[in-house]
Image (cartoon, rainbow, N blue to C red; front, side, top):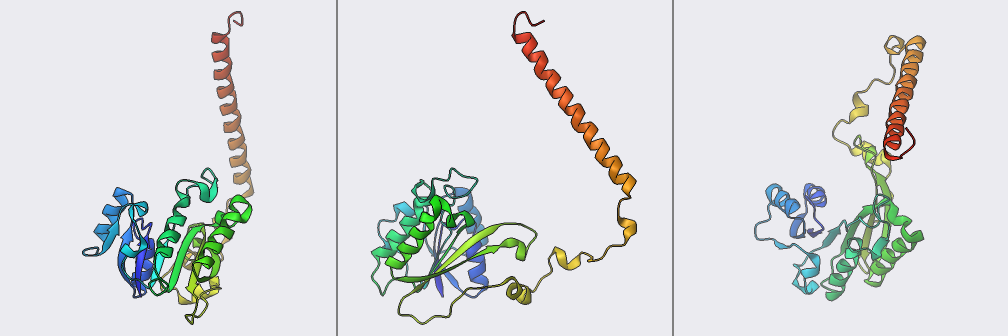
Length: 246
């Protein structure tokens, strides 16, 4: 399939789709450093590109593609962000994708939409943001399925993400989800950390009870001394700043 890579970053979607045998025909990314990396890692010569999705006047400018991939900004959705949701300046870029999609005729629309975002999208604004995403895809003519995955299934990193797949109505398809951890493990062609760790470790490698108690005692002492020093510094500062306290 041919695909367009929106909010491309340094090419997470690109790598996966290209490894699966698909071809990138266009990409959109505003960050100049991400763009430099993307151009260094992938063959972008002659491919459609734009630095700002809002600068694309109409979806008809885009090349024909079978799949649109987009990990729209999670800045306003993530628990680490300001949590204003899809109304936020960055996360509202999802609606730009929908705008471009609706600019195209039914025949010109891609067969598949592939969206990724943080797990908190499911509960952002009490679930209304996720409902909005599903509803907008439905209005555009797509049947939607979704699932949450954790990167810890395959790599030593705990990172939960929701993946949403939209299938254009009228085209026969096989559901993508559910994908279980067992499915991924069976298809994995490389080792991860748990493959090389020993499941049973000899007791001689364990700390003795005395050592554990000593470490805990030292930690408590260290914490107590830090508490004394920090509070002494605070008291001295107050003493200096408040007349008559000396």
